[in-house]
Amino acid sequence: MNTLIQKPEEVAEGHYRLRIETPATLVPRPGQFINIRVSTGTDPLIRRPFSVYNYEDGALEIIFRVIGKGTEIMRGYEAGRGIDYIGPLGRGFSLCEHSSVLLVGGGVGNAPLYYLARELKKKNNRITYIYGARSARYIYCKDQYRARADDFAAVTDDGTAGLKGFATTLADEYIRKNAYDRVYVCGPTVMMAAIAASASIAGAPVEVSMENYFGCGVGLCSGCTIETTEGLKRACVDGPVLNGNIIVWQSLTD
Ligand SMILES: Cc1cc2nc3c(=O)[nH]c(=O)nc-3n(C[C@H](O)[C@H](O)[C@H](O)COP(=O)(O)OP(=O)(O)OC[C@H]3O[C@@H](n4cnc5c(N)ncnc54)[C@H](O)[C@@H]3O)c2cc1C
Ligand code: FES
Image (tube, rainbow, N blue to C red; front, side, top):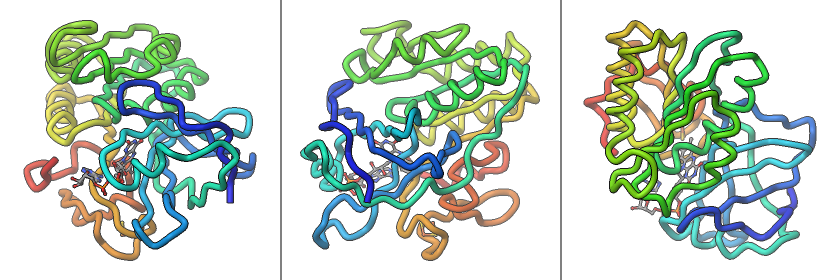
């Protein structure tokens, strides 16, 4: 059991940050996730997966959006509570060195990209970050993201912060104009599919973090299977980070 360091902090409307004390032997890689048993009872029974947002000085952080029973329970946690989680799990992002990289996040899908940006910065990469959100009120920790990026742009569907429009449009424009060594994306399926297509046309490698439904989270139930050009993959153990160019996007729904 790991201890919750502080009460969930609301960082944007309906979005909370959890800080969990974690032993130094369990340092995550960017893109990995933890699988939390949210309740001490049997409802909900299945663990809930969350990407690592940050890890620093023995504290692992996640950002979660309240959308259902499990996350509603998590919102009510008190500091000092024991958190029953398994992880870090799954395959994370590959870390380039001395390269020019584009990171694109959509909504809560920005979460794993913060820790990624931090680690990429340590490896002397030039980082362009596109932060996509529906509206200004759903943007969390913007200054932290901005501080890790060489170039930063926010895009909102309604234009209440940054540019008005979709992250996909801006990403496509950037990819056409710049020769990125790698593109990293996490967000809604349609967004990842569009950016993977843009990167593929430009010949840039693209890594996506899949946040589809998970059952067991450890490779046992096949509940997270994704169709790829290399056969079926289990997102929990073969991913969640996968090569965006091998995913059969039309077989997926958001
Ligand atoms: C690898 C991975 C990493 C993730 N990282 C994060 C993260 O960093 N932050 C975060 O907020 N969420 C993340 N998620 C999604 C998160 O796991 C779900 O939002 C959470 O399990 C919902 O639990 P709940 O009990 O509140 O909702 P439920 O009561 O289970 O569901 C509520 C509603 O949300 C829908 N829903 C539930 N899970 C998903 C899902 N995975 N995809 C699409 N719709 C879903 C259900 O259909 C239902 O309509 C991640 C998922 C995966 C697989
Ligand atoms: S969630 Fe069970 S195999 Fe992936």
